[in-house]
Length: 121
Image (cartoon, rainbow, N blue to C red; front, side, top):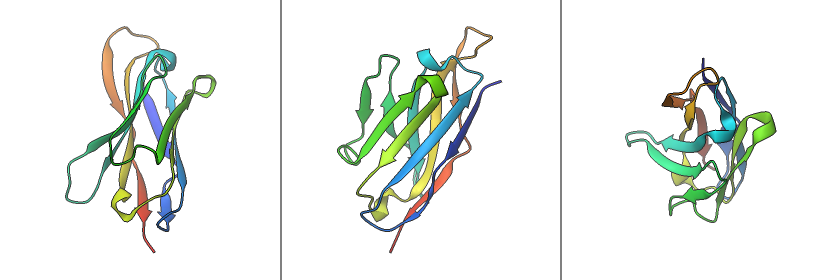
């Protein structure tokens, strides 16, 4: 059974920083594509950043230069370091994995439960 557990969200002032973590279990983490998505109130969920199997990273324009996605394969954990936060970054942030189960071979999408990030003074 795959499980993604996010942590690290909270309330921060504009210009501040937060680091989100997503601990994965039950999947072949080292071969997975990991991503962070976010959904603001009244808006559609959007992809924020990805890290591919080879370690290549990609970002949407709105966060490039401010956010950094990284992973620790030994800890089966992916991170999102968020700096220079803006009120428009306020959203629920979701961890996503395109992965195979440890005991399987099919590729599927898995999601965490989400963690709230609020940027406000």
